[in-house]
Length: 331
Image 1 (cartoon, rainbow, N blue to C red):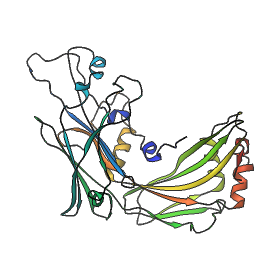
Image 2: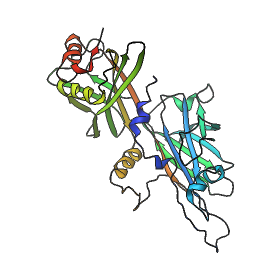
Image 3: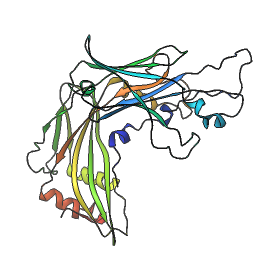
Image 4: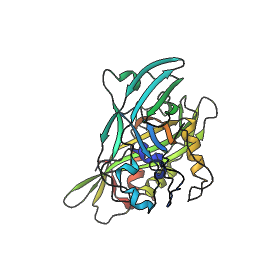
């Protein structure tokens, strides 16, 4: 089974960002034209070969909002052009127009399963400068042109990959050093450390690929160095908390263990902090960095490091008090 991109998972962004709606059940008879607002959502991940921007709109009408949500023209603008620019200081490195595509259908819900329009930019020799050459003052500008509407604009920063300082990844890693010090450098103002465990559930007649992901560290950048003391028992508890018991599983075969450092800019950090205290009905304030629209345009830099646990660490995963009931095997 394909392991979902943990960046898309770790975002844990409210679904309302993609379809923030300002719904009214009655039209103002003194307003002949229905006012709509562009809704923009994009998280640039430069380690990927495709960048994506979603452009939708708010809607209003005389009837139920649930009825309007099922109509394509109530959700999307018929015509829109989306442009992405990369700037290094005052120098524009590149500019490209994104292509409108109909992605895989949505899950059943109030919005139509089809169409599912998105604007994408695919890496190619012509667009490669937008994807590469990360520097400290790298900035991305987004413009959306919609006929009859003001120009929509947003910008965000993106940062180079992190550099792992400890532990050294040239050999096996002892997860039970007291403590094991994970430390890394990054230019991003905010940083998070994740772990990703790949394994297979071996059943009587088949094998199913699995992936468990958990966050271990989250902090505002103190100086130029991040460090997270990791203890072996805490690692075992994390694994036990992410993997479910299943009596049909004969054993679980561990294939890979990774440490992932996510670097995020201020706009994404502020967004996460704000939604953590926002009421469930989203009243009180808008969360947006879009000019002439609402939504979120931001980025994150994902850096993955392969870890090879030493025999003691492997034995603890297989036979330790927290994880032995999960039937893990390294061999």
